[in-house]
Image (cartoon, rainbow, N blue to C red; front, side):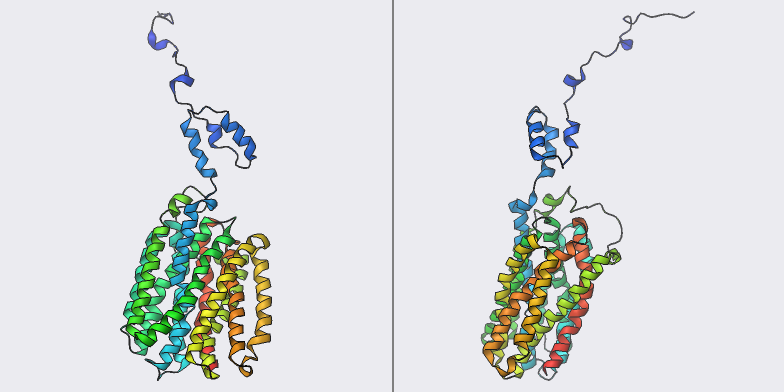
Length: 434
């Protein structure tokens, strides 16, 4: 016998008399996954038509924010500026060390032997950059920038106590290269990951820090070498580097908040940090080859000018001032080139700069020995103006071959070829100057 129940006799069999629109908070799912390619005025009108009591749907507005125009992004650019002052800025001034070594601690060594210390330093600065870049892509700049600042500061405190060739080789050439490599990679990588649309301008502002370092360090060292001696000169450099990296570290603090949830940062990426897959890209290979050739010329000239000026009868002070002239004029070009590359394109800008550099070499540098000091200063000024564009455009060209989330790894990988150019350029230029 089957009992039949009335639908109203049991409460469990009643359909729920609940109105879902009033019982639960309303979430506009369509607004959460809206098409970002939709015209802004259509999105705006649709947003205003929604009820103001929908807090969940309004959270998605942060992903449409243009962080390239926010002050926190430009604060990170200033941090990169400071890190490049004490890393690339000093690397571009190493000709001052070569001149001092040849007259003091290492006067019994040849210019070529001294050049190998600087060549090893520059080589080991660039070789592990792909590893630093992979770590930056995964974990952000905080830990790396702190480690780089401590290592760079320690390098110059140790160098103040060095006296022999191999002490300088290990303290500066090997140990010092680690901190410099980390600082350079972090500084360029942060800007490349934060900026796409205005990358040229942001990169131009950041790399101006390297020009400032090339301007300041030779003048500081020239004065301190003469009045304070070697030990206190290195301590003053260490104080400058510690100050710049400490402030720069604080400037990098907003980085994760700016890129989290965007295509520029993926903290959950898997795989080995020893990732060289960038070399599978043909466009990346050709860009890296061009950077190798340009860096070979730039580093060779930077190491050659102080030595060759002394060879043809100029004073050691002229060699220090030449590097400062290059740094001062390159400040101007790096800003201008960075701004123009956003409109003309990085490749087009680099080709134009290379053509002018070739003309400059043939017109001024080759015959300068027979015309005296003024022509050499003129060459240094024009060389800084043109060569400065390379350091702005090179990271932009690398960025054209990859996604923002992989930028630091690609930039670090391109430095593998640059390292080879730096290794051989300085010793060869020193040998030619003797």
